[in-house]
Image (tube, rainbow, N blue to C red; front, side):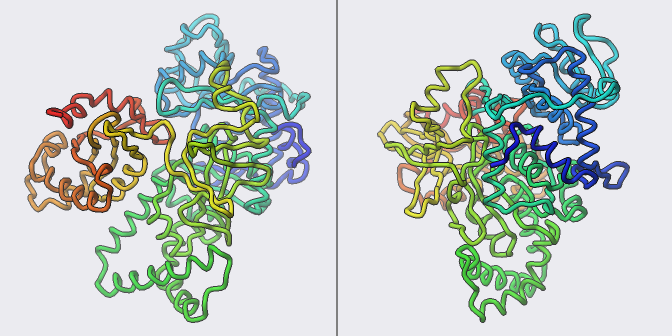
Length: 593
């Protein structure tokens, strides 16, 4: 365990060790530029002095509304180093969600990156009497002040007046309040201490053997606990380097430019890459397609040996040596040539996606966590991987099952509680310190955890049968024609589904050029399009239990979005909201009993 009493102290300890080595990198004017540990330390000390001058004190909440960038880290370290409590906000959050978080947390200041976000905060400032200061992280200022009482200052101006050292700190001090979007109701603030986060960093470092030569390409929102702990604090405590992607559209290019050793991602991005590889393959010659099939088959036979840390048999090793050069090298090359870990989190990774990349010798790792656990709980490790599971708990973390199959977790990483919600805290953490995750799981004799479903999202049909909507949605997501799926049917006679088509794939499947050019609103009602989906669902239902079969569906012309409140920032479905928005479509599936 690190001896540092706080995250900011851990950073300063490494600054003394690494001084002029590069800590943060971003692309400016077409070229990658780096900030050393000393650069970041000096900038955070200057900003800390400015925060103290405008009246911020230990325990005050400071929100950050920004995309990933060095200024995010500098602001975070400045606030943490004076005893402040950081409240991260997603750049994509709706105005209502931002206002809820700022109001509920009682934030006295907010650091904002971008004129559009400044205007958003201006518009709600009058309804947030506790908000006193806006820190513009770049140089722009609003054209007109939102209120006379509200101080608006640039980060540059605020940091132009000397440096402030670290304040006193304890591992039990609160470091952050992270609002979990949840799938029902308003978001709740998860209170995490410096000790919670540093314990999780230490356990992750031990598990993955990360060090000061590791470099991560950061593109998941740092407001999310997975990216913040694993992609920022853990890399920081390891003495590594963080490079910030230019944007989602430039990830492929940035991967090749940076050649990271560690990439944190979510299943959706891997699904997109997988789909593009297969589409490219479809346009290849029959000989190249056959070569790929042989390579993939060999890779799938070789993968279990790597999972268990055993040597690959000589005949298979020889085949893999060939396929590594002529097939798999291109796939691995998508992620650069230094990759040690491709870590997938945030949602379950479809089995076929995992098997595909594992067969190509991409070092893919699946783990499990939740914000309330700071967040990493378990991970599959190199040589100790069990497909279909999320691995074993990290060092210092205990896991067991409740009588109903709910996964319980205990350890130094478990949150202090939900902010100002004592009842919810008591429901989440029992008297023995076990965190009730809300996930239904199985744990085998070796301690590997397999997540089955969300406890509160089990559908109970009117006949008494229990159905896992997440499991069905994963199966539906493997159908090429389907972009999104929401399974419904609680207290109903049978299971139904709201399906958002992948209109590009639908267009490819249709043989009618005139029909393909019609708008989505017309396509979802056309008999030929419905027939395509009916065939896919018939094929799916053949492999399901009778009570699980999807007996009715409706096609939705527009995707479920975060702006509409239908998905969380981590792309989890808000089933209750979707069912409310599409109540008519849902009811039509059950008309006539």
